[in-house]
Image (tube, rainbow, N blue to C red; front, side, top):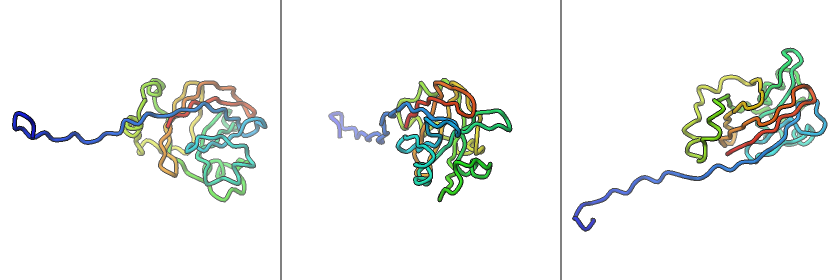
Length: 168
């Protein structure tokens, strides 16, 4: 009871945990310097040999598709079904849920609660999306981690690369 003899109700706790971020470089599937497989839970990029032995950790892969002349982020499951040889023989092919969101959203997100509010699983219907500079993607890993990715630099092609800022 308060001094005025009125009972106050405590407000429910709302997590204000801040997102953390890292900047990573991913190479397209034929880039020998930068890995094309990303574990968003860490976040960490892996070269093909390391990714194969850690397949259950890989959430997305970055490839260049000659058929459509596009740089693409996709799930390992999609990459395997599409015949990309660098994922051949993996023990697990994750089907991470993800989709593009408006560019401006990335800079507005500062708490994990905001990321949770942003996530809409019904929009995560495509196993791959073409990417370009300033694209923003939200993903939910097989471990339940939500991650935002912004492509801050893009060098197109089979040996190209993207620099991404990952927030989680």
